[in-house]
Length: 118
Image (cartoon, rainbow, N blue to C red; front, side):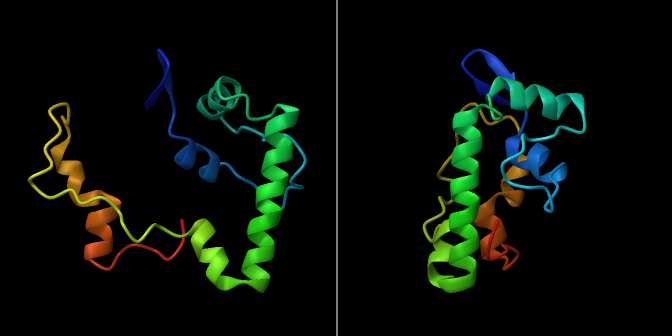
């Protein structure tokens, strides 16, 4: 969970990727498969006409880049080259899950486990 204002919000990447239908037309509303995803869609207003139009635009842009410009495609869907380091000199006082540092994107890149795209 992450915070949006004073509300707890589920992890959009986990919830929306887990429940996405890749064959669904882009213009239809997101279809939640569980209450947690439904709540996220409502909280972030992801099915509003404005957000649906934005989604169609960007999915189309990424699709075109994948087909015609691989460099642009990986700039759009790849991880940045300058991921922040999580070594010991960065010690946020509120980090209560320090064991999670070994699973961060930076550490995964160092181990050669980071995919080319997310």
